[in-house]
Amino acid sequence: MTWRLICPKCGWTGYEEEYYPYCPSCGSPVELEGVLPKPNRPILGEGNTPLVKSKTADYKLEYLNPTGSFKDRGVSLSVWIASRLGYKCVTVDSSGNTAISTAAYASRLGLESHIHVPAGADESKTRIVRFLGGKLHVHNSREEAYHNARREADKCYYIAHQSSPIFLEGIKTLGEELSRDLRAESTDIVLPVSSGSLLLGVVRGLGTLREKTRIIAVQSTRAPWLKKYHRPRHEDHGSSRLLDALVVKDPPRAREIASAIDELVILGDKSVLPAWRQLARKGFLVEPSSAIVEAARIKLELDHPVLVLTGSGLKYHHKMDILEQS
Figure 1 (tube, one colour):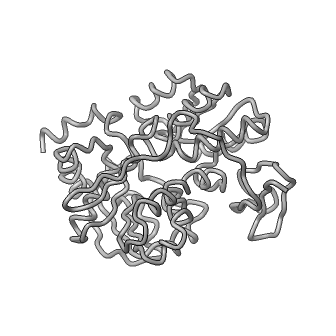
Figure 2 (cartoon, rainbow, N blue to C red):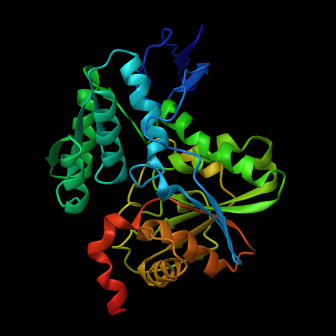
């Protein structure tokens, strides 16, 4: 056997090399059993991003992935598997980095991509999706975009970036790189959390180093769903309009994510805005949702943590005048 999917909740077992984005029996997230094949080399150059050391922290530059986001790790493997399984198209619900990444990798591997976005999605990102060849479908809400993408799963490979174990297998390479870079060092790793795929991938990839790390999750005031499970060590109040990549409110792997963290911080624009400027002055051109980890470092007065900078600021050039005005 190479690989197959299984459902830990109800016991459903799939056939070898058969893909489902979720359990067809009970709808729960599924897991991999066996060995998933992987490309012999990066498809667009994803992965192996730098870990840059400074006086205050070590910064893992995930925004230097091909489309400017850590999502390239999960999307590249997902689209490659889709192509290997004979799919002609992929589908995803996203209004941001996953949408751009899916359009790019689908075009690279010769698949059609259907990108479902909510009305009001950032125009700078939807333009990139179109330019990369993605077929854009605009819906009234995030929920409607989600349901329409899932509806296409009978004919297209649904990326399912919030729950798919194949997507997580791609993100897992980030944890493996951190394990290699940090070796046996004990440290804090600070991560932004929305759907939680970044955090779960990192934790799964850390291996034995997980025992020596403290995982600090940072959420926006707009979607602080981890409060159901953890008391925040610090919590802002107020808007988080800048943090448009941190908006998921009820991810399918919520309990697993909650059990994987050691500390929770909830922040809004008032904390993130100065941190975004501070990162820029250090030479790190990131999106505001990435700057939230620098804000957490400052709030908690952390001693030289690892901060994962997830998305490129080049997609937010039109919002940088906020920095000038503040």
